[in-house]
Image (cartoon, rainbow, N blue to C red; front, side, top):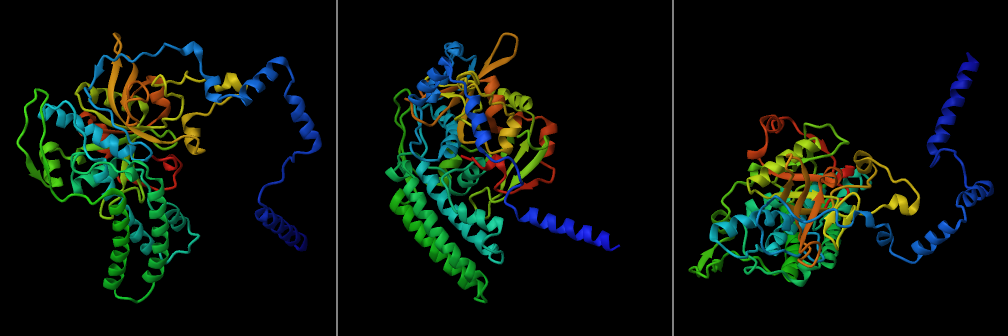
Length: 467
């Protein structure tokens, strides 16, 4: 019995020691190991030439596959007509540009316009103010948790940002409406958001600490609310100074493609949205391809919204082939879609192509890079980094699809006159999110919306690189 107790105690002590170690015992880089590593790199003429080339040049240019040149063209069997490439410049507002770019064709067609552009700055202003309010409410709601709690840590690490997704767009538009670009033009700060975002985050973190302390006091709730609104006034001031003050009403006049001039008319932003667009954005559904999670399931991402009273981002996780079918149906019906992806992977900016064969890093480095999409997501190697409008598909005579067309927001001098052509294989590997009207979804998929959503934390790997 004593021996048994002794062995148990010894085992528990050993476990305790292991638990305190920062890592499990393993192989150190000893002189023998280092010698082995040195010998593993053969000093051949080929390796010497590679080292000379790679140390003195851009790796991406060296890895570019010449065998793939010219194999992907920019001709499409079915394209939704678009006019006027937008440019988000040095900002993370691609989600806003993408959402607005899916609505622009409706306005151009309805009023027979050559060009038309909504104000991105108008909706960006409200996005930033609403995100600040959501942060304030969240830090007060979690005031009873310690600062090193994972949720609290995430909140203070991400108090506000200029990124977003479809839900942040649709909620914003439904509450604040839309205005034309002429009613609230871009400013230097809206096109270069880094410094403004840093100042907003600094102020929000400072206020967040105060609100955490305030939330735990016995002060009347009305007084706490008053304190928070005072803090919001500072955020509003920063936004006005950087972006200008959003109009409550404005005058809009337009010229048709035939040169006919309309009568000037006064609008509020909500009236403008209802008259020019007149659709229910709730009829659009976010679908996603994340092989690390169960398919045919509804998911919800905590805190992934901008309105406190809004809804968290929800999406249906589907197999990629089903998503492609829905996308094809939407394009054939002339309905552009919000599309997001890991745009930096295998992107040839000069040619305007997204193709798995654009660059061969395996051949250049002599090392195999072979993770699956699921593995890339789980290890933070891949995630959605950019949003664009999906506006075209190329259907071959046998009915198969070989490529898709994206309307980008990097300006007309990037890619193929502002557009990107992606191969069908690239779509499968690096597409993440697509927003499709319910009209193009089958009943089986629509029924998934009735399921209880699985709540995901905001630090889930697939959202770590969110645009």
